Length: 95
Image (cartoon, rainbow, N blue to C red; front, top):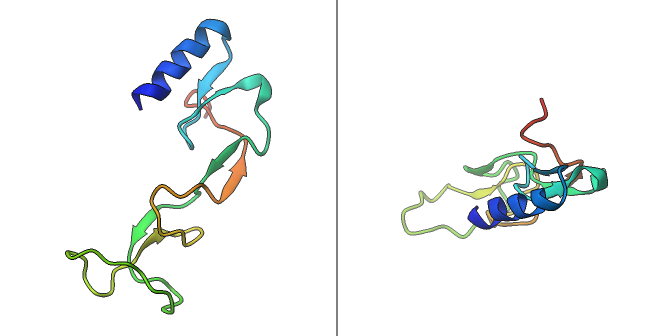
């Protein structure tokens, strides 16, 4: 997160409308914020049995046999998976 904070600070020197998105945690310029600027997961990364019961999940040695780890919104099993939705960036300053 240090790199992102530095990027926001550096960009802030050049442009006063640069903010940090609270969904994707990336810096953005308010002037170029579009409905497809932010890519994020609208749900949590969970560890539980998947509803369809048909998918194979790679389990760690400490995981119970029924555990599944995935994003509840799209089923992606990698915690670093690219977001499945796009929308405007939302600043920490926004309500």
